[in-house]
Length: 77
Image 1 (cartoon, rainbow, N blue to C red):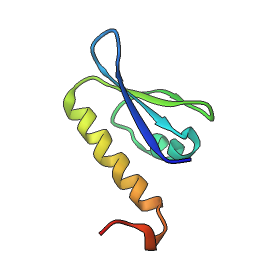
Image 2 (image 1 turned 180 degrees about the vertical axis):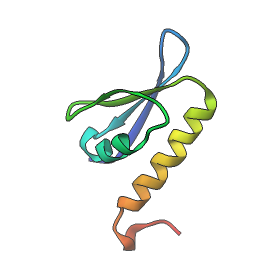
Image 3 (image 1 turned 90 degrees about the horizontal axis):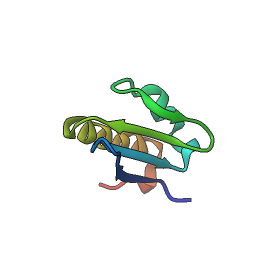
Image 4 (image 1 turned 90 degrees about the vertical axis):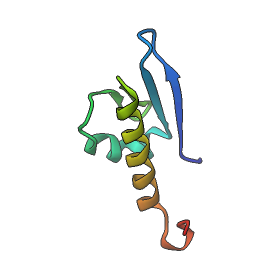
């Protein structure tokens, strides 16, 4: 399964990110302390970013995490 991040909006107009597959992103979620996570489990890994700055930080950190987990030969240049 390919690693993905889904962006939706909460009723409070905040950014909600759901990470798929949840087990792949679990270590990232446990290590990211900038915001509290909605859920970190085998079924779901999700967080709400209150503003655009947190959204960007989450996406940058998630990209770096994903790249660090790729085999050396498959990393983009």
